[in-house]
Image (tube, rainbow, N blue to C red; front, side, top):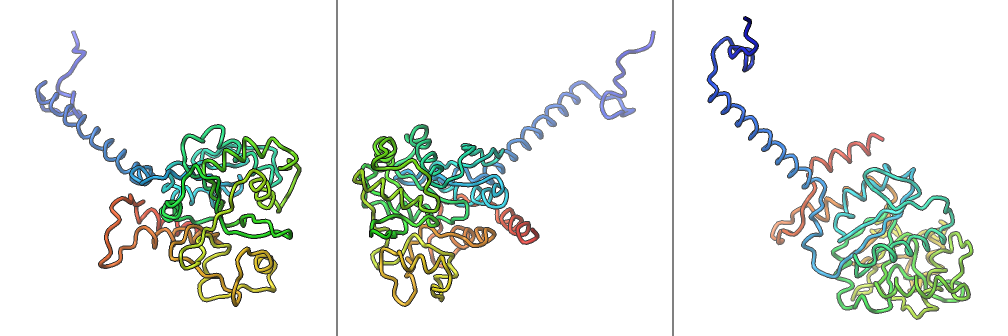
Length: 332
């Protein structure tokens, strides 16, 4: 009668006889190796994701709302997701379509900037209000220093009716915040806007406003007694910058450029010699080219200055991963 179970070929087809005890030992060793590899993979994935960056951050809690669009998901949004967004206590991308990494809240069929702004803020208030003390409304081409944002709002309470940004004034000298620099709301101001301003058409229109969206936002907030705060530092340097850093570092605003002229004409604070003083406690600025987000992140969070204390609370993305992303951007 033929043998159905041949111990000679049980392990790797060996012609030598292997004892059952030795086979069990090899099986246990293999299991341990597999478990060790899985543990290392999970640990590395956790480091790369940067999910623990804000886990030990001091209060107040910063909730970041990052606007994006389908055609910019992989061009811009993904790079914000890999860098400064991880320093927020919680963050939410808002877009017009789905994305498997960004996992945005989707708002289809809205094209007017004011309608989008209203919908985004109302959604965050209704579903994420419990997750933040301050709510930053930013764009996918912004670079944000979240730690400096926390430091800026320390003198204030999230229960105050106040909001911050790069302050402007409209034709009636009413204040509003510059769209490209990001806007920060206290929890109280967000709640007041959604519950009291939005439902009242007489003080906050639901009509299309186009590029005047943040002007209408300023009008609505003013009508419900929300104060427009001064985000400048003690030396009157601007924390929320209106343009890319190359404009503010060793350069001047050019009045022949429409966006520069609009800013000069509508800046809430006087601009001397067409230069905007930068704060050393920078919070936010727009980027002309998204690839430079990695340069800024590297200089802000990874570079070590001799003699300076190590930022032990920061969990860094792997440097090789950052360089790889930069290389991909340069090739595109």
